[in-house]
Length: 133
Image 1 (tube, rainbow, N blue to C red):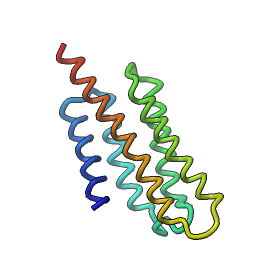
Image 2: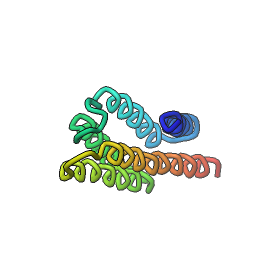
Image 3: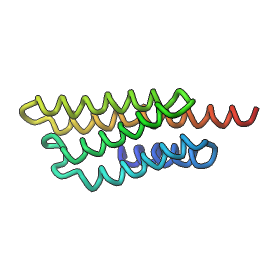
């Protein structure tokens, strides 16, 4: 059920970006799709320990969002990058934890992916509203 909700949010935000967004929204949507695919390939241990491959994917997405935020005249990429940075801290926290934490680690990563997508959706909505005026 949760995987379906996550994919629905991803594809909904990507559809919005490609339908109504500008260049920045389309670039971010492509980055989110690529990061989702790469994450599914990089996940080795089902979050039983720090997922180094997923961390690398998340760092690459953060770098892309920071680059977009620095070059964009829109405000939403800053929010997306900030939410992505918070998601990175979940990886860092997992490096310090000993014991069984797979569920909390996975939920923490999933939880912080939604605000990143919401930032894209809000940015797309604002871009579409800006263009219609």
